[in-house]
Length: 308
Image (cartoon, rainbow, N blue to C red; front, side, top):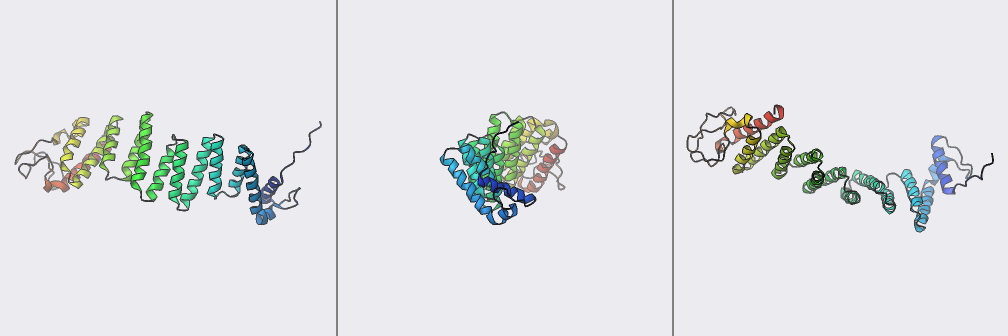
């Protein structure tokens, strides 16, 4: 059966064929008479230059598919060159290949991060998110880069944007995972932790919500923001009255000798104890019991983590 004439292979592609052959056996290319090892050793830069010129010619002719093929070959020859990956991203966008562009941006950003150029990586992560805002996993990478630079506020903002977007889409479970990451970034940020506690409560995860509320109460105790603690425990009481109703945590003023849930010397909550200070402004916030109160709140958090 007759066949058509063989397809001629461009010299630069023949050189690349020689490169590939040389990696496995050093065979000579039939057109060039040059072995793959010789090309790899002496002519690799010439091959890359040839491919680059051909890619630029493709762009001048508006042959973006051809240019993309050549730049992808260039990234194979020089995978640690972020500028080549950026060119792949640029051409992919021209071809409306958003997925390919995002992947190329992430490759370039990873190379910059590896070489401790996190500021450049951050810029590329943001560009990738502009191309595809639904790639919430990029928010994790962006937050990590901010964190390495010590920009905790920016890291939290990146995760916060993902959490809010997921909540708008009704993906509450995934949103909660981001809220937890935010709380972990800065445990002293009570605003973020209260938001996490509320979201856990709305999701019906009462045990986790109670534990988070209790941890916030501990942080308020450390800061001396005692007026905020009773409101938190009122919320806990509404969710789990069977566990801590006996502690009678309210915001009513205490008279001298009034019943109080202040812990005894061992740190055990004792409803029969009395408040040692007349006119205490909040239940169970006597300054002399601050250390024991922290133990109490930690016990509440542990109780609801372990037993619900």
